[in-house]
Amino acid sequence: MKSEKDRSGRLNPGPSVPGFFPEDDERRTPWEMAVCGDLTDRQSDLIDQMTAVRPGSRGIVYFDSCGGSVYTGLALATLIRTRGLRVTGVVIGECSSAALLPLGACRKRLVTVQSTLLFLNI
Image (cartoon, rainbow, N blue to C red; front, side, top):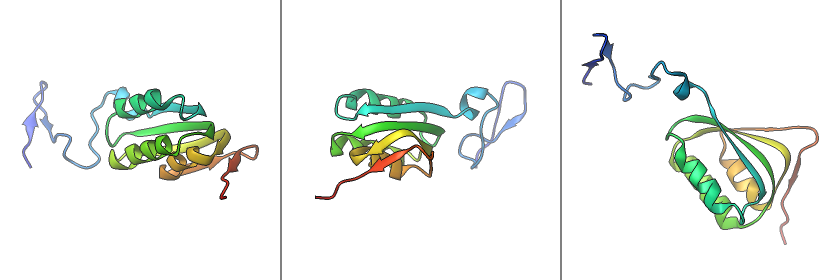
């Protein structure tokens, strides 16, 4: 492993060291994202938001969606897993059908007593 000196002259182990985070609050504060409404209508916005966050970062995704396109749900779940995102999914209302796929990809899943999870298998 190669170490470099930063501007203050201290050794900087670099981002390749597990658990290393620079001291700025932007990287230590979890990002937040909302998945609301029909997934089909918001596909490009949701994928843009998910790809805008730093790979391997920690974040919270709030769910209130009745579902929509299963392809959009699979795309979001794939982005969460392949980018190594450490996501906590919080169901604040309904999470049904295709919206269950990205929820299932989250490392932690939280629901309230009033939350609704629905999947129809016909």
